[in-house]
Image (tube, rainbow, N blue to C red; front, side, top):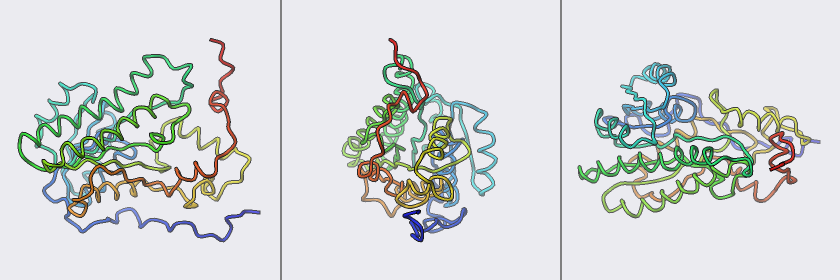
Length: 301
């Protein structure tokens, strides 16, 4: 018997194309989104565009930028793009030099892949930390320095992850990096608040999209194969909301945090996950060793 049968869960979101704020909220603003060519980054960029913002999307790979530029331009906004490795402070400075100073910075770019800690090479650790934490720091520093010099306000939004608080077995590198990002949010909100710069965090829950990484797809497949029956889409019963999120819901949250209606919110991390991370702490599944989850044999040294 399905114990959730007949329960409504949280209502579905408004349709794609709806906006959370008044039309024109970001008219005349420039929003820079790292990792803006794919997945959740592109979804966030789209919601700013619907509210009138011009966009500057950044990615390490040009092949991600072309399709995103075309898609976002269809929303009637001006879209610029730049290939940029956010680990390189000189390249970051070049990107800022080549464009107007963004009013909003969304640090969405990150790196991640599953690996047991005992199998993790120093290079693997460094690569994820350098992109996820150091890259976020370098982008934020450049944004902040330029606004401080210009005497202008700005808004920074750092995309985090709930395992910054809960820990992330199999993702020690990413969990540690995201914990650092969360600390940056709190620290810089205090440092830069007197100068009119807001710094907030944004944590997504499960929001399926076409650019999901292989490890996330694998986790979803394992959930479907688990003994516990799943809901109609294969995952609803594992969510307190009885549904997964839509990428646009993260975009709506981002536009709110950067909007004039959130001027007194800073140093805060907004979690958009239907209470899923709290559920993990209250109703924990049986422990499965990470090596077994990833299909790896015994560690032999």
